[in-house]
Length: 339
Image (cartoon, rainbow, N blue to C red; front, side, top):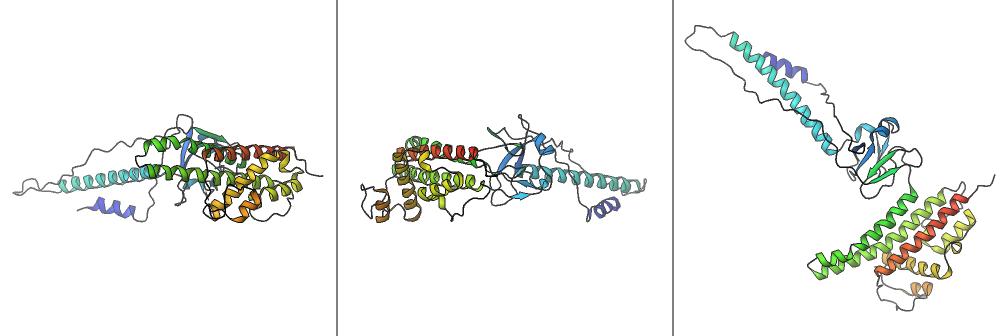
């Protein structure tokens, strides 16, 4: 009785259903993409022209975590759900057509003058009109890769080019410092909008302390990236650029200039204190030890006290690492490898 339906089901068995996903670009010409790494799932955009002409089918990189996967794996969650619904609608349409055909065949076989008349009717819902999925709103931070010129956009920070995977060290450094300053600017709002004063102050304190650690880490990563661009860099231990003294020595060996050619003695002393404070925050929960007092000459603390990190101090640290980072950048640009 259901010959057409059974035939249709048989045709579907083991068949891969193909659904074309129509992805529209946003108002600025960028396509939505999402990292397929379950631990990341970072959403970003790539300019439609560059996705077609520059990005390779074999390998695309997440702008946030650097995960690499073929181009076909970068659909967003919304795009995948849209495709699933489109596939469901397509199969539902085939079901309806097969059942209507079976019903018509059944009705034609019924005797006309019989005392009992049986008629089969298939009630079908109107076929949904599946409109193409619209792109999300444009993202404000737009980036052009300095290596392959691929254009992409993100919310927050980006560390890798989706086309070539190039790590934009300077961009990462600048973004990190901007984020620290932006977070510090939120402190007044946190205090005014959080009803519980204890929670507000603890949140601000954590924000300020994290800012200090992030500033030092941002400089370390930037210096390491520039240092690695040297054709034959001197051997350096892990985390060598967490130390201003050791970092300055290595930089002089590689590029011929020390840190004191970019910062004054007073500035280096101040920055050195902030680097030591970061070390205490990271490894001793901010508790002062004799080594800190000895290295910094900071006699305002005694052993066993906890550091008090102030907003102004973090901002000064950010300014100093930005200035020193600018000097290192200039050294790297001016460097001519020996022939």
